[in-house]
Image (cartoon, rainbow, N blue to C red):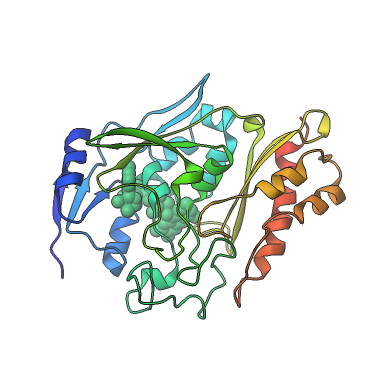
Length: 328
Ligand SMILES: Cc1cc2nc3c(=O)[nH]c(=O)nc-3n(C[C@H](O)[C@H](O)[C@H](O)COP(=O)(O)OP(=O)(O)OC[C@H]3O[C@@H](n4cnc5c(N)ncnc54)[C@H](O)[C@@H]3O)c2cc1C
């Protein structure tokens, strides 16, 4: 048993002060990932800073686009009328995440910052460079059906777990970070780090910083965007493969495509090769789309059990694009 100090921050200044001053601090938002992983030994903290009641819950759609406070509940964003209308890909990605009970507790910031579901990370006792740097990666030779085919290294092949991050990646979202020293914003595409030799460092978040909100603008095709999630059972399950498709196709010809994959990468995977191949394609022509989809997931390196993700991903891409681009 390990003692953990609990600090309930009364405001953002207190939270940021505690983050800077406390030893080995960890933020506690909805707690659905933190509490689970502290129990399994995957996460270790000396201080838990409870930020759950700070006023960072705003969800807004206006002329500039979408703003979501870091502490907005997943369920509140998913069911928000204007989000459903202007950014369906966000609402769908959230609806298809976890379970209703979890979505009622879990927050947008916590979802984007959640740790991987790799079984070797979760369970102490296995070699895992993310949990214990230098201990090795049991997944490479172990059970790796759920693992990454893109962005892996010899040190880590764990997939990123968030569905929301995939949708936001396709929308070119920005994350807004704050520390006691000030604010900055980072494109989500630059926020997550590939594992390389340091898989334990997953984002560019600096010590003392926290995520305060997320924004995205109204990119072409956002109002008809679509999230397709393929998983082993219909609910309460992470993606084997998912696709966020934001397609603009006036007169049935694709003029712009924003595509991101989940379940395949060590980070949410924006696929610019697929995007380029899709531009100019007729939405109604399945053969043309299937051909363009061959450009997707370029550079994939499968492990023993997950080679199926390449074909599954390309087929899912065609379905998602046709749904997003149809009848415009
Ligand atoms: C059975 C199960 C199934 C699930 N299925 C899915 C799924 O299909 N898709 C999916 O996307 N997710 C899924 N999840 C994960 C779930 O969505 C996350 O647990 C949840 O989103 C985390 O949010 P939270 O607010 O509870 O975060 P917490 O548990 O409070 O925090 C998670 C992490 O984020 C950090 N953090 C929290 N807020 C901030 C902030 N503002 N700034 C910086 N760091 C912060 C914490 O320190 C911690 O490291 C599932 C979880 C479970 C248990």
